[in-house]
Length: 263
Picture 1 (cartoon, one colour):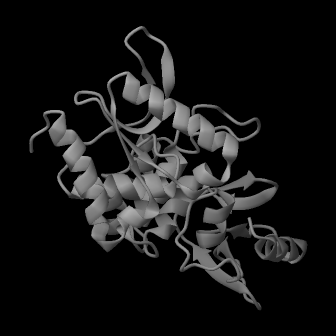
Picture 2: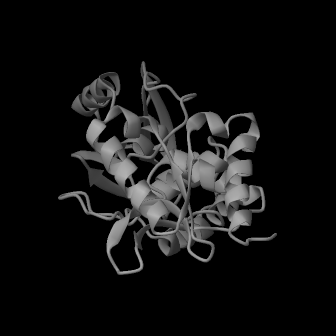
């Protein structure tokens, strides 16, 4: 998290009053939700209170009043924030459909490895569905619509955006971040999107994969092993998702058709 935001949070915590919690975009960042770059990290902090407490005001502070009886406050990294599901509901009035789905995918992810002190998922899909059913604030309709596309398995915002792009193009839905083995049961690796029936793998090739030499080498080896085991591997980079993703869609569709898929 950017230093300026940490500084803003720390400064506000030093003078905050009981009952005040970080919410909206600030809480989203504390929960680690991916946000589009249109939201800067220099926007100050969002703070919520329940009536009859006075809505917080001040330089760099956006105050909100919590009237939702289902919203709760929890401690995360030593600061009070709105619970994960409520925070996501608050974003529904601010984010596009795809970015809202990406934020939820982050919350419901069951990672391959758990990190000490940061148990995941932060909320299950079923818990999120129950929370949306009880949410009637701004963006409630958008939240219900986005929930239909939420999946456990996407490990980054770009992976979610790619999945939704291919889904809207009418391509079949893949399994997400699953382990792939060769015919003798040897583990090949974990892949972003796997179409088992047609033995097609789709990998989002992010910037970090090429900047980290060790990661790059591991990726190259597992992809070579997958191809040798009979899989067709399509690697998608950021540029292929521009121009409405026509390049990404065409490449994945071509691979699926070559393995027998038909609309």
